[in-house]
View 1 (cartoon, rainbow, N blue to C red):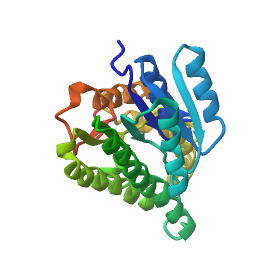
View 2: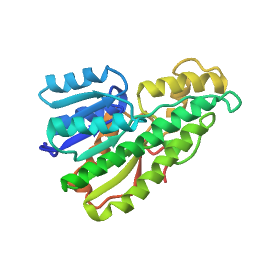
View 3: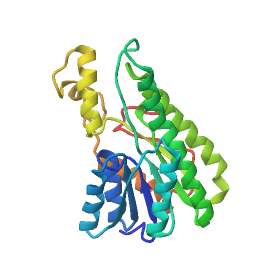
View 4: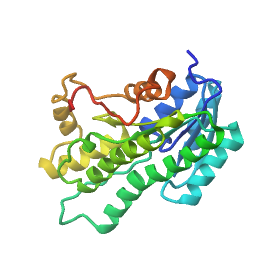
Length: 260
């Protein structure tokens, strides 16, 4: 099924994990894809997409820097002419007891996870307005946008901020055929969750690698961690015409871990 032929999709945080899977899913469905990250390995993702017959361009940049964000969307327009979907997925986390958490940790997490979402959504909306084709803004939040967790107050704050940005922008562009939504991944099999398992495991009781993750998964009604494809299915739905009347929403994709 080629739901996104002649559509251009920008995805940040696309060098690995959820972002890379989302990019590949859009490409399989016919989209022109701009894969962006702050590391050169994002070029491998673009090459993999191209090798499978998809259309992809990579961009190495910094979502916290306005000039870099403008250059990202310039690259999308130069390559494919328009911007139809923008997925703000770049994110970082650190884990520390409150007395050990540094100001620089706080600033970095807030800059990438919240300011980065704002800057990319701001630029995407400007391009969508220019092209007058409508569009889809999709932001990555987290289960911690629903409830904070121990040792990550900065991360919870950053992701709750994403929900606020999503709702505010959705109201502003609602009459312009632009929808703005967010999604909250739960426990997903990614490098970030491997880090979470290791560091939280040490702080919460000296767990061996994998033990804490296994314990947490038992708290999920579906009794399994999620995959990138589980998330990509929701994101592509929100980007499709089937979701044209859905805006300002934040949707959990977590196997029933948080029901709200």
